[in-house]
Length: 251
Image (tube, rainbow, N blue to C red; front, side, top):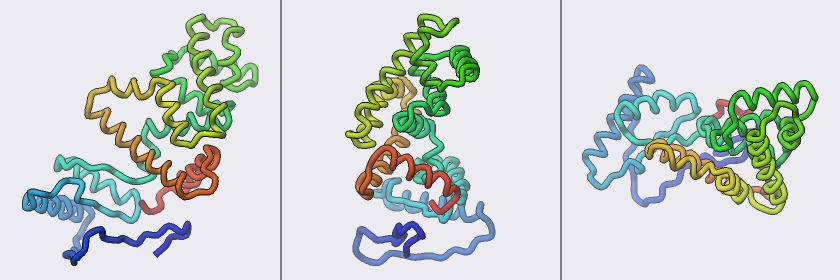
């Protein structure tokens, strides 16, 4: 079976032999969740060779996964949530997409405002607000304000230095955006901005969660680069926009 975009939804087993199929008709979502979670726990307890990664829960729509996410958390079962909507709402993914949008159009002020709010660049809320007042008064983009920060009245030397750093990275990456892959551009952003270094300062459990989201997004990028004749940043952003617009379609 294929959906309207041509993606196959057929499930294929990696192992040979027959499997056990059971059909359960339950009264509520909560009952369904409890049955699934308890079954996972029973199998895991019975089969000492089983690992948590041997289990998977498939749902037809992203919203159907919420009750299972809750049940797994309550049962202290580790899990990864693989769904575009959930993934695209994660801070690290939103930050990466904002940066890629800047490379496609560095006058994209909304994306640049998000970047300036990142702790790695050190801007205070007051500094960002001052830039916002200036661009509204002058009718310029935020990028233009950063590039001209030294000549803006009331902008201090420290703010100018931070602005120059952001502009320098944007200019450097813009020179490479047409010749490097999306994955390479993402890695450049994470390294040049200090994003990866900042992640390692966070407590270990949170770091692992962020890295899991990054790995999931990297896989999305890899699939894109392998399956499109135009693996450019611009086309990747176009595909992401289509997926985000699709909203609550199947996971």
